[in-house]
Amino acid sequence: MEHAPLILDVAGTALTAADRRRLAHPLTGGVILFARNWISRAQLLELTSAIKSVRGDLLICVDHEGGRVQRFRSDGFTHLPPMRALGEMWMRDGKGGPGSGAMAATNAATAAGYVLASELRACGVDFSFTPVLDLDWGGSGVIGDRAFHADPRVVALLAKSLAQGLLQAGMAHCGKHFPGHGFALADSHTDVPVDRRSLKAILQDDAAPYAWLRSTLTAVMPAHVIYPRVDSRPAGFSRKWLQDVLRERLGFDGAIISDDLSMEGARHIEGQLVSPTDAAVAALQAGCDLVLLCNQSLGEGQVLDDLLDGLAGRQAQGQWHPSADSESRRLALLPETLPQAWDELMFQPAYLQALEMLP
Image 1: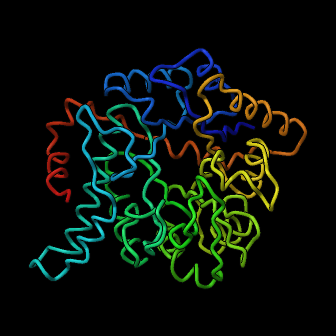
Image 2: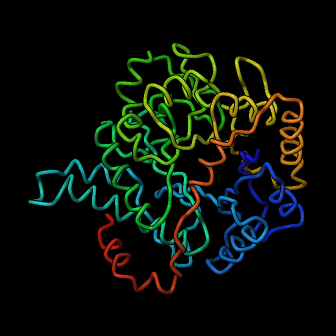
Image 3: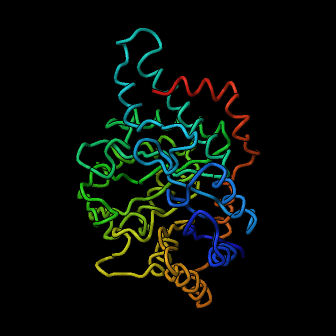
């Protein structure tokens, strides 16, 4: 049975022999790009073409949300607004005449999704980890203006509008960070955040957009946050959160993709320091279809080789079993249409109209 659950990074602006070897591994299902992989549009297109020449079904991903989380910012890429700017547009409802406020905000969100996806796809990128569905509770520095709003209803409608724009450009999307990172103050990149609210409170507020968008979302990324009143494990390693709540209770059937397993919030499971292989197996066993390991290709990239060898070893030992359903969810995230070339995109009426609608 085929199942390629690992999304890895590459070191630089062109593939090395080591990159090609790792990308050709049967357990590798995708690549995540960062600002260090970027010089120009021409270079990015060469890089993405080289990745696809290794394996045509590799999913090429990036964190490209707008605001401060946007990896490619020069050589013609539009500087997209932070999502909070769309929430602020919404709050001007009724103050600027017909069509302003909520209507303008949903249109702007669709425009942002269309511009984001069409520009990325013109450079060979398949998929962006957006939108952020976390609520803006005001205390989380790592989320901050990446969140649309504090009201889950506004978040859901703006995220649905953004997803529509992405879809119009042929790109799938990923709601994050389930069930919600906005209430926890700590940053899961450097700490292990804890949210001590009850399941009822979380479902009522932070997780509500996931329930409302279950037929829209193509993928979900769980948070490296511990909710001790629900489970002692971070959500991304918790069968309770991923199977009982997200799959069963909320009815979500798309892809579940772990957040970066190199983050501090993923290094500890129930008080134990774990290796990337341990973390990957735990995430897959909990219900993730794909797992991310970022920023490990620099230098010799030994951590990536250890993960590839480690997961293959666990599979041989029967500690991890490939999933045909997970593989089909991965393949469903690949674009089904050909991208539009950049020079053509610059004159496309829908793209030009979308640019005018951005805040």
